[in-house]
Length: 283
Image (tube, rainbow, N blue to C red; front, top):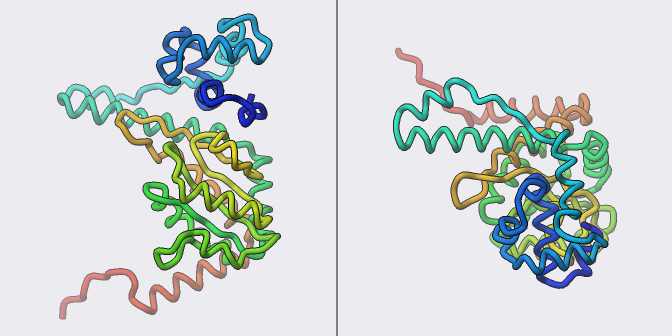
């Protein structure tokens, strides 16, 4: 289905992307609920089923229902969650948000394939230059990845610099370089255009996103996905942050003694420049 998405019409593409992004919901929901969540008609879903050789919705959904038997996540609710609900309306909101964040972290970490992460780390360490880009809410995650990750990966460059377009900073990039792009629904135009430009220059592309299908026009070499479901309007970045922390840990481990020495050097520099606040000693 992922391979066929670029060839589908807009309506069929929307359904296919929804199924890829939410396989558990698709395995459980009736056709009308799937149509509502995917913002399409039930007829469009039936057309997609026929396109892939199924007799109808139920037959297309059956493999996903079977997968739920082994793939479903069961998380016990901690006692403190229930105690929050007893404090009132805001306590209930806090409890739901806490459960959502914990579930996102668990799903995101469980979904990571060790072999894929090994490929990603090798790709990053082998590249002469690694560009890192994101926009809007995702920029905060990119900034943190750059701030900490450059100690293990000194070739890491956060773009855009000086409020430019990321494409400006990619002009000097060349074959052999790599780029990490972080974006989530709704996907940033600047980020997608930067990905397209990077691919045209022969860069390896690593996507960190909430979906394996970001844009039919962009094919990443590797896509790391994180769950971003939330109880409010915007996506929850707890799972993305957990994924980034894992990536940093792997880079530090593969970086060996050289990475550890750079970390020590950074810490010494910060100490000597009084980067961290310390309480004044009383006379």
